[in-house]
Image 1: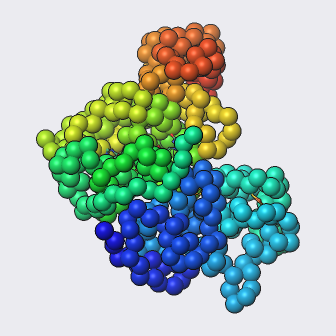
Image 2: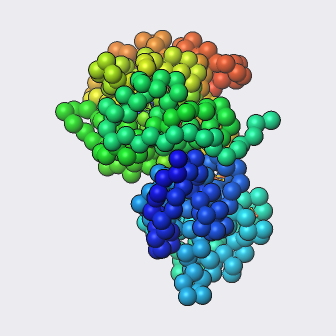
Image 3: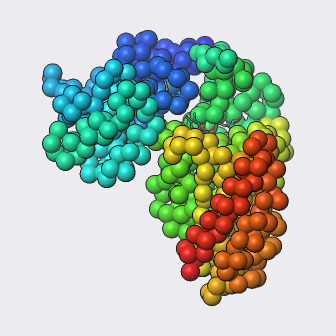
Amino acid sequence: MKQTITLTVNGDEFQLAVDPRRTLLEVLREELHLTGAKKNCNEGECGACTVIMDGKAVSSCLVLAVQARGKKIETIEGLARNGKLHPLQEAFVKHGGLQCGFCTPGMIMSAKALLDKNPRPTEDEIKTAIAGNLCRCTGYVKILESIKAVVDGKG
Amino acid sequence: MIFIRRLPQFDYVAPRTLWEASSVLAERKSEAVLMAGGTDLLPKMKKREATPRYLVSLKNVPGLAYIKEDKGALKIGPMATIHDVESSPVIAGKYAILRDTSLVFASAQIRNLATVTGNLCNAAPSADMASPLIALGATLSLSGPQGGRTIPLEKFFTGPFTNSLGEGELVAEIQAPQPQPHTGGVYIKHSIRNAMDHAIVGVAVVLTLDGSDVCKDVRIALGACAPTPVRAAEAEKALKGNKLTKAAIDKAAKAAVSAAQPRSDPEYKREMVQVLTARALNQAWQIAR
Ligand SMILES: Cc1cc2nc3c(=O)[nH]c(=O)nc-3n(C[C@H](O)[C@H](O)[C@H](O)COP(=O)(O)OP(=O)(O)OC[C@H]3O[C@@H](n4cnc5c(N)ncnc54)[C@H](O)[C@@H]3O)c2cc1C
Ligand code: FES
Ligand code: FES
């Protein structure tokens, strides 16, 4: 039986009737058409589906939409404001932090969750924060450089 | 080939109290499964390894995510996550072994969802929270339709992915006694990469000195080298009451191997048990001093 839930996504409130077996990821992508978060492994291993829920990075493929009831969700689509990219997005572009781009929304959301709490993380803290985000293209060096550029104010 | 599909159909039940949750479990028997963070359960359901008719979520039961110290014991609520352990000021002091464990546990995205209790109840032989909590002497408070009972964590596991919960029973709290002064705790997780991997071997040591270098008490627990997490009783016996020396530690580490009954790669795992037990004992000794 469908249940009615309220989700706040990128500042906007949505009332949705969802089947309890739908994951947050499926609802974001298929109901709200926010396709930035990617459905890849669908079992928590890759981080491509990372969104921020009440300030914490989570794998949205492992959250039931009904369990996100009343929570504040941030996705990659909410980062740019009035056509201006978020500093992390700017830095990824400028420092080549992406190639195919499939891992990028998840990578940036993990980095954002870290920087929101800890604006001056060490390199190790950055590595820990993105350890659950797999990238098959970049070899991670440029990703790390991009995030460090934001930390050092050189975004 | 295992396919990861969308979740199968189920009825979502969100009780408001633990008592209500346990009544639903008792009434629906094998048709109902309890869910905490869902990081073990949801992947299993997507693979159709679990197809519960009723999914009983603890999310709507208020006040279950606590970590606190009370009457000389650590108390962890059923919805406290691995991230809560990582960031808890209570844990960071005397129970730092649990913080160290949280740091080698999965990824940030999983730590924010996964609960300590779910990790124990899932009962994977490699469950990272199991051996450090056994080494701390943890017990579980269970509650069910017949009332409550307490069980030492090391007696909780009955085999790979099975535990001793009865019908309708659930874990209401994890408790661990406050470590004595001069205690050091160490968990070493041996895995292929740093993040995201299950332990090949996990060794947890909680060692108490008498104020000098004599071992007053020690508890050693091994993960991923037997059908359940196990205590290395022979190794503990070899050290208790004796002066710590390099030779004494090496002897105890050798004795730890007898507790291992690996289900895979037995030679390698036995060797690693010996190496890592010695390493963990040495580190715990340094911390305890
Ligand atoms: C990508 C990934 C990486 C992982 N890495 C690690 C790792 O490094 N180390 C590790 O040990 N594990 C790891 N895991 C496994 C999993 O995250 C942990 O076991 C986690 O702690 C399970 O907690 P949960 O709250 O998500 O459990 P759930 O999936 O909600 O539940 C697990 C089981 O426990 C039962 N249960 C939960 N709460 C209770 C209760 N109060 N009373 C009775 N039964 C209960 C459920 O019925 C279910 O059978 C990983 C999983 C994923 C997906
Ligand atoms: S799709 Fe969610 S972690 Fe891979
Ligand atoms: S840029 Fe292609 S997976 Fe990361």
